[in-house]
Length: 264
Image 1 (cartoon, one colour):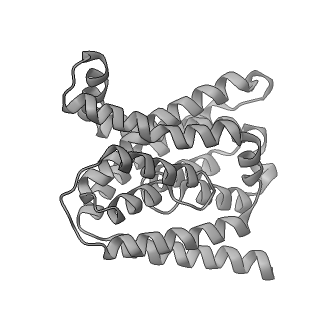
Image 2 (cartoon, helix red, strand yellow):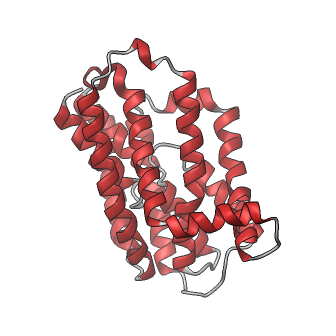
């Protein structure tokens, strides 16, 4: 994998993991542009490292909240930190179940399925548009909300459905305060990303692949830095109701992907 391509993939992952435009969809489009042979055997390892970089950037931005969640779980006291921690845990079950039970079927979707990506981007566009028009409230996240948002995250495993877009939009449509919705959306994905990274690292023989350290490092750093910027930016955008711009963007990219696959 060339350094330039690794840099581009890192920037795409860092930006689109937090901005509601689907990181998986954009990575599939980028890989299609570069060509499957260009990404080569390093693809899985690069994907694992890029997701790790964005997970770390989330941890950096929300370090205080994450410390509270961890301390809440180990204090064994029924307080606000414990309640919030349990809601995060509850939100993980739908995506974890889908990821474990339908792992092979999901992997098949990440094989140059650009038409599927285009259709899913249109769905993301509709979700963002509806969320942007929803009324602003001060409601918090309940246990029922956590499960529903978790289901949205499970659906967002599909390439083209934005995870942050689906979870934040679902939260806002449920009447949850926008800032709380964004915070919950970003925090709930960290355990899943780290768990998926661990599974991929343990189940794959990366020693058999001639992995170039420099491109992977460049991609990791690019994803981490852009992830920090995008995560902070996204919090402000949701608070100020700016999701319509991303809705338009997803619609345009989705239509381009669909037209390209059908007519070219």
